[in-house]
Length: 225
Image (cartoon, rainbow, N blue to C red):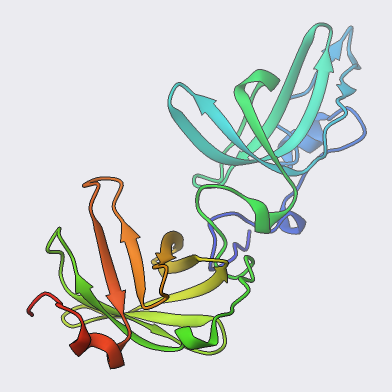
């Protein structure tokens, strides 16, 4: 089954499923269903009013496993869902209460984000150019942010490969969507009141580092290399 190269979530059009009727043994054998409900030899599952297929998390304690719901039926007092485990490609089933339903829109999925589908807007023409890290209380390896005029950019690192990102500006907030392997990681920054610094707050250390425009670097008391 093809998977979007920029996202671990598959396109729903590529997933086999059963909707609007009770699943049969043929459906189960073909991978379109995870279970078959029969009473007295008759197919008796009643389809649930749930969009099929759709994205979901299967919940097991603190673990949330990305799945696609391929079947939703009720038998007696039991409502169950059949699913495709995206990582293992295995078919499974569980009670409705074991799932967090996420809908059918690939671009709105939480957690691991689709780099190609977020379609981040961009703005702040003055942002275009290179912004070196100026002050970092945590003393992390120095990097710079390169902003292009088309809403894309790169994290420039001296001894490691550059990291591609998309960006958007909303008021004083700047959001980067950095592409790391097969994941897209959101990074939030804020403009300083004078617009000359990009502030990066660390939830882990509670410190704030900041970037400045390359042309302004000499005007700030920046950390030495």
